[in-house]
Image (cartoon, rainbow, N blue to C red; front, side, top):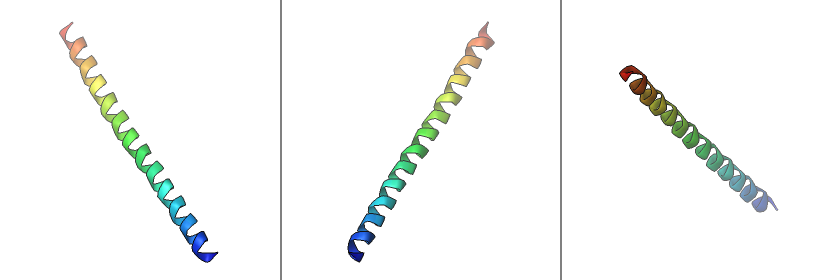
Length: 48
């Protein structure tokens, strides 16, 4: 029983870590996307 609880805790922590990792990657990707869109828009509006 104790072994089962420890394994469940480990898998729960692993899934939490995976979810946090994906959220971190997603936020980094979103940040890069917004910065690139901002630079593109600045380049477009500077020409006009």
